[in-house]
Image 1 (cartoon, rainbow, N blue to C red):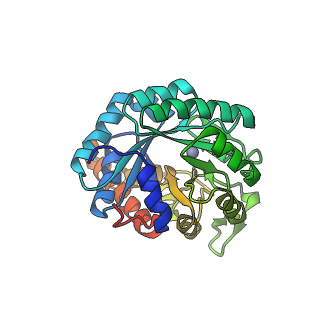
Image 2 (spheres, rainbow, N blue to C red):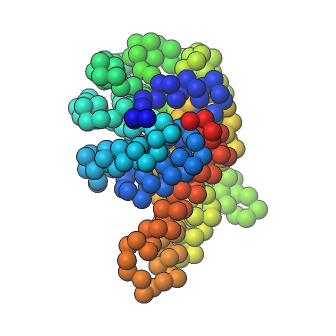
Image 3 (tube, rainbow, N blue to C red):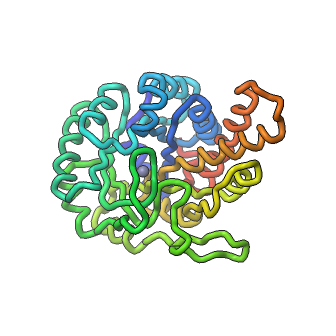
Length: 322
Ligand SMILES: [Zn+2]
């Protein structure tokens, strides 16, 4: 099947009590690792491209890599999504350039300005058969060009969501309930420590999520910043020369709980980076004489595939839903 929009994916996910993974792509190995896992598990999948990824790899290269994945995995629905579009022009360029879904993130602007810009993108996108994700509320953390200091995040205000969705016409809504961008999602002062000395983050605000769901029945909700920062990868990075103290993410059981509710799209980026970096560091340490990039990118790609397969089965619940 050709690239699809997320419309049908989300309707099925909403009714089926699971979520579709949205994984960030920057190069061939990442595209392959994600889609091989989704293909084998018969799972729908969203490949998303940030402004930074587009600047790094070039729009055409990324679109063609995703098109190749579509040809190689004809049995699963794959959507190509712009992550954190910050201007109408960027969204338009992706809509014109083959994306099936875009995000306009005007969440840092005042409410009415967020609505106006989102509405403008929605009108153009819908005229071209493309769906739009918008955002209300602010996540902490760093992701490419989006950076919000800890303490400056704000939870989504449920009393605003109905007006926002009806005035913008957006197709899905990213909300802030305590997830966070990057591999350092929380300051140590926000957390407790478990017996192993690993930070335990504050729980997600399910009360905010449930209040949003009540006000938007049947409407797909999106969670950004939802990597779990698996400690096996952090350990691997640190064991083989890295230095990532106190890197932590969102516990997977909480994401699984959200996926059973109206959360239809869960964004995962940092876990891909960690899987690759941990395994490449390990490879370099164990094979200091090797210098062929294929030698160390192969286990890195396999690690992405294994990690994504784990998410599909144990976090998203989207296996067999293609
Ligand atoms: Zn994000």
